[in-house]
Length: 104
Image (cartoon, rainbow, N blue to C red; front, side, top):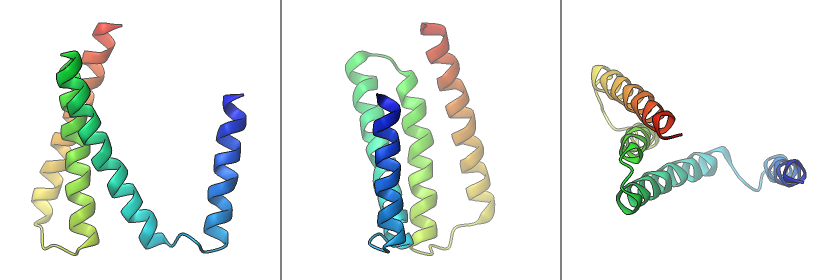
């Protein structure tokens, strides 16, 4: 049943793109908003449930939000800064995955 919902959602989004109801610029903004929502939810659940692996996910997606905003608004950010930020995001996600794995 879940596959049916996913298929219907995919077809709906596909129709929106083909009819040009959602532009690619809007898709980028939607993506940034969803990433920011992940940051907020990861912080909330991390503090509420006292499972601090969520902090790593919050850091990872926080860096993604920064990168996407810098790209969207054409901020002048040094390439080395972005490279180090992505390294930190990757290590943070990796450590968070290991923390989740240890709990299950």
